[in-house]
Length: 327
Ligand SMILES: *Cc1c(COP(=O)(O)O)cnc(C)c1O
Image: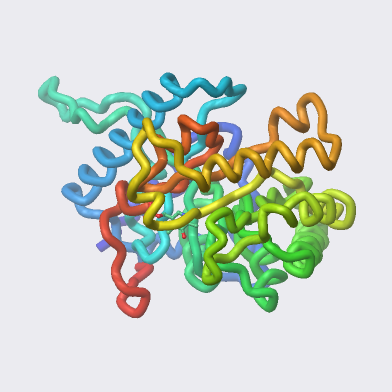
């Protein structure tokens, strides 16, 4: 399926020079699975690629429009995390390779979906799937772990996922400590490899804003204490902000005009954290809110979201986990 040309485009079509100094592409993890498993990876069909690019382009415009309308002042653009869980690696590659300027097809016609630019941030919920994807996909991808965290997987998550950019679902001190340990083990290994390592692992504290028993996350009232723990006891973690999912019903009822209580709650929790921890200046201003998914991201942006996590609207409905295929 995959020609040599196609597999080399996997590495060549690199979206930005800031990620060009890729941590090495062969042995960031202790096993030596080569990244060039592109040979075994099927590329998305032209039709699938066109659909994905059109969806990405539409979501990107909607984010821009909501940001422009939002009364919240921002120092940086809203980050889009494309939630790719249970979707094939070829879908991710198609978005990562999205062209930044319209590409003509030779007869002066250009696709309306072209020009959205490379999508760098992707979100995943399952460690095994993320490990596998991070090995076969380009090293420049910035992975977000957004799923329910199990303590016994925290060390491996922080240590072994190539290109791990953030863990968004920290909800206990124990998990924070284990992530801190895993990141330390990664750094040790990479120092031996004489590698360029990110200083700290970004984490978000997940807050259960809806009070539902089956939802992960700390109670809003306990968020400041956990945030303090991360800042004071986890030297290898950087507290990037707070994350919430919120109640499904409220999420479905959210429009850009209605105020979703979960988002209001997360914002209030952020204010409490900033106050109780005495964050000031840049530290306070850069403390992020990760909120908003397919059905409610515009409402979340209106209420001050810095990062939205959008899956279905970009990739379509997800298959059941038992039927998901990575390659
Ligand atoms: C799956 C998931 C998303 C994306 O949900 P969609 O409704 O498909 O956009 C966002 N955040 C978290 C934590 C998720 O688990």
